[in-house]
Amino acid sequence: MTKRRSYRTIVAISVNVIWSIFLFWFLIEFNSTLFFAIVPFLEVAVSLNFKNVINNMVSGALLLSSDQFEIGDLIETNKIQGIVKEINLNYIKIREFDGVEIIIPNSNVYGFTTVKFTYDKFKIPFFYL
Image (cartoon, rainbow, N blue to C red):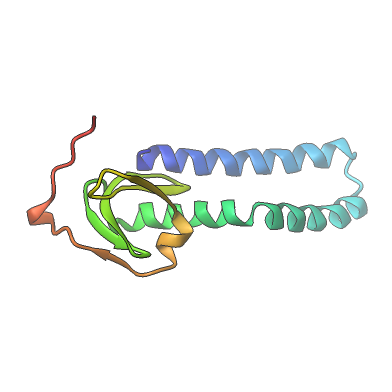
């Protein structure tokens, strides 16, 4: 997934959430007391249910915007070493040297130490099959 597509996904989700709030607002005919009483509980319920998803998406957005590593880089994180095959909003796909592909949630990569072995001058070529 490219950065542009990831940013479009983030914007689309944000717009949908805002649109849903306004739609809910008009459906209850804007009884402000009811609106301001229900919305905080809904926010807490949604944030608790989707805590890991939100954490992975925020970590993914930070990883994509920081350019710490990119596809083809050799990295080690959480005792997993391999070549980055895909960077997504939710996960990073790494191919180990024995050919095994591992999917790591972005929150596990962003929150822990990651060693980048690839130097731009000596980039390891990566070919898609």
